[in-house]
Amino acid sequence: MDQTINAVQARQQFGRILEEVFYRRHNVVIERAGRPMAALLTAGTTPVEAIPEDPTDEKFLACALEGEADYVVTGDEHLLRLGVWHGITIITPAAFVQAELAATVAPAGSDAPEGR
Picture 1 (tube, helix red, strand yellow):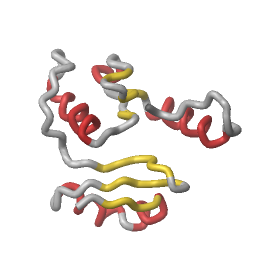
Picture 2: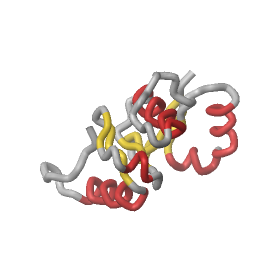
Picture 3: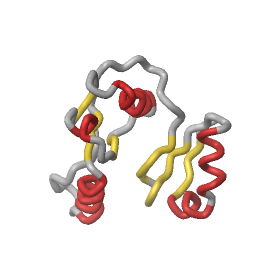
């Protein structure tokens, strides 16, 4: 069973949310202002062969692909080298925050990034 919660609920119930994801194998989407901002997903099972130098990172790509993610936010240099993979933008935490802030404060109709 997948569920959607807001950011305040996520902060208040973080332990329970992790239990849902890791032990009950449920996916959780966290929203801010009615817009999905993050997701905690169970490990992906789709076969992925995108990072021969570190195949252990491929589970994150499988998870992002199955979860229809817009972003993978990481500091891992193997993942970051991909840039965009299957329409999923792979960026650092700082770049993600900058993109989200730009999208939040940009006037309607501007060229602010909006994910995929």
